[in-house]
Length: 459
Image (cartoon, rainbow, N blue to C red; front, side, top):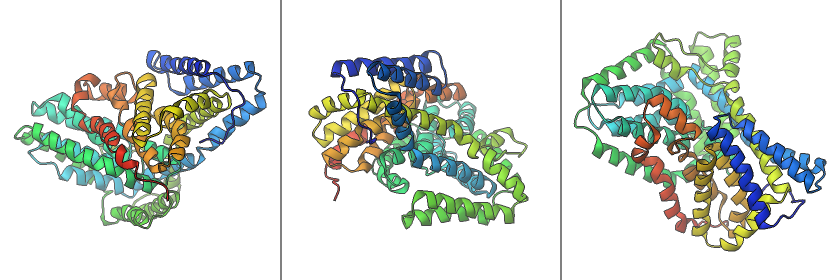
């Protein structure tokens, strides 16, 4: 838990009313007005500062709480910088294009929904961004569905499921890094642990999509795939050395190298490979490190797919994390969150009830606020102390945050992901929601898995 001692002890009623008011304020701005989440969180900070001053908490202590809260996320922030660099370097080295091309190669003429799910999952892991995957490969699959007269709702469900599988399992994902860092778990240890619930959800989802798939997807969809592959090949980015950065990252994972060093090593190897095999000057490479890579294949959908990365692309997330953690620090110093936690801890003793409550809180924040970063940040900070007191490992908490926080956001019609995906795919959230099997199964499996988590104690 954030090492901030409360300077005020409100009653449980006062704490609950204050918390509901602030969450309601944030929800109104994000859902009702459609503002960027930074604005309502900043307003929430202003509100908590005024509340603290009214309760005679010196401003110096309020400021120290904000700084302490923000500093607890510095590990994640440094990783976000590296992720931006890694994506850029993997682009220019051909690693990500090679992974995308491999994903397209597995598409056949049968099992259309199942293949759409599997391919978006592969590419989602490669890109580390569910929204980018949906806006690029997802749009292509929606086009294929139209060409073969398949269900748009089921296709969209397969796309969303695959994209968010990739978002959960990719070391490039900001939510995956955030969930592991906020709880204090090594990134690769976190990914290995969430596979306990993620892999079963993937297998069940794949089987369901295969069962629902039409008998033959026809040649029209294959022609679209060939367009993508031709454009990727024309960029002359894919070669044997493209796989080296990925191999380096896998080796680091196997030997449990810290995430920062692993990402740094893979980025360095990818950059060196690009300088040798590519036609880029060092000046161009450093510019791409900051601003990201811009695709120029002559085929706009593939250009959109390849245009990403760079430190600059991570600044939105970094600024949001800093504000949200400062907000959390104020919730602690004003006594609002400690008061609610004390009341909650008296009722939650068993592992199953703690995990169920964690999942419900993460889902509730997604529904009330519509923001997956806040669902991870607020829920993680709220339950860290409770898991430690109950003797549960940090990995159990970070896994639950991913299973019930990250994947629920696209299922909420007014959420950031829900609005984006519905606009990009042209399929309403409530239409694809029943078919987003992976997103629906993940929280269910993690809750059912809670009984076994009780046996995972700190040694």
